[in-house]
Image (cartoon, rainbow, N blue to C red):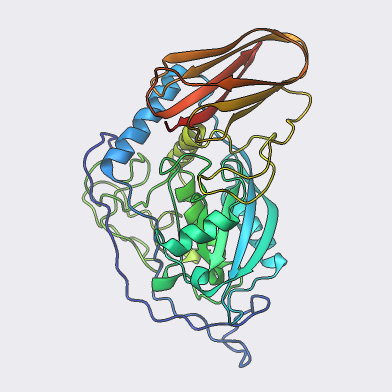
Length: 412
């Protein structure tokens, strides 16, 4: 078993030389049968390569400290699971390369639901849009093209998983950002995947839709299984054996570290073929739930912001949608992040006593917003911080047996 001390680690960067990709043309994803002379050639990828930026040790330390603090302070931390709504953005090259029919995205959702079965997560197709632009089609992580694309297209990032399909440069199959990389409603959140990696796509060995499964694992808070190599704490997960470097293909029996256990080559967070992928571990499920509950607390909110393109600060330009009926609803802070004040909206199904407080990541109460009897219906209150530092806070609503929490990021 791995130890969980937050030791300094070096995330291995695997630079794999991959042949250039050949366009498959517009239209539906072809069925690439090697015996069919009319079948276009597969894209020539020599191995999986993920562009998810390395998390710095101090970032991981701070993230896990927040998880522990919130777990100790609030019983609402776990479970962080539910139905995740997915907005697909089909980025198409000027040549038509990258166009995908609606059925391709439906098949991708099916592949994700199959591989996340038993996790507590379910994925639901919410929307598909298409944009033709060469610079966005070849975007790379951290570039101006990525920022421009996501700023223009992101749909309500706090409540929606945005997935962008394109043909990334440097032969990347995809990337994501970790839940703690930005505030939950930042437009940069989501996953970018190569269009050829969807089920039936033209990338041999990586066309069962599992690149999205891998990248969404990052989006939900997981690191690569080979993170840190053989040095504890590795990938910060107890039940994934240590692994010195990424595994490619499907090398059964590979064992690169002195600690017990063969390398986790079947784990979705390694680099093996799609056909070799079979599992997430129970501790990985737990880590996802902790990360989502701490850093993506609005992801499963039914009374979400109305769908619309994100602004430069990651907020949607649309107004707040009405919360659902029949249950207590806490929409959370808007805008988020906010600089001077934020509006907190909530809905009550019946007359009852309500308390709403604001807590820091250590679980200390820093402000009280509501403490009174209120009638059924929609309500709102203003949170105007006084005497507190910039950072992430949690708005916590209590009424009867219901306790809800939403994050609020204060940026003076």
